[in-house]
Image (cartoon, rainbow, N blue to C red; front, side, top):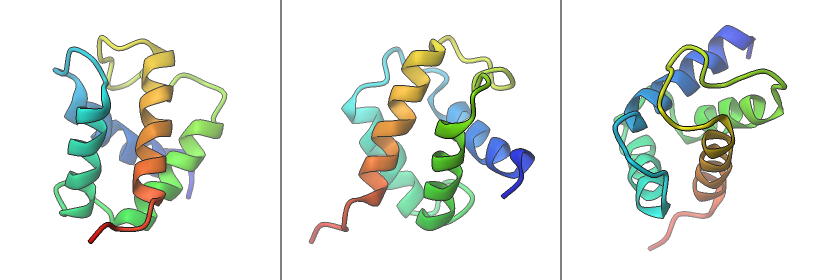
Length: 91
């Protein structure tokens, strides 16, 4: 997955959280459910791959979506989202 591919995927996730005041567990659950439910492009595996690459990327992740969240908050959120998506489905 080239930079533009994972970057576009992550930007889609960031656009989905741009109006959230804080990136708490409720937001992680909402976005994870949205990925699983098909509200975001790509399936769970593709999203996990994009998140893995994004979290390894040394540059800024918020340079295109430009949300009000700090780079640190975004990276923490994406890490928690990755963990949520990597967990076995419940039920």
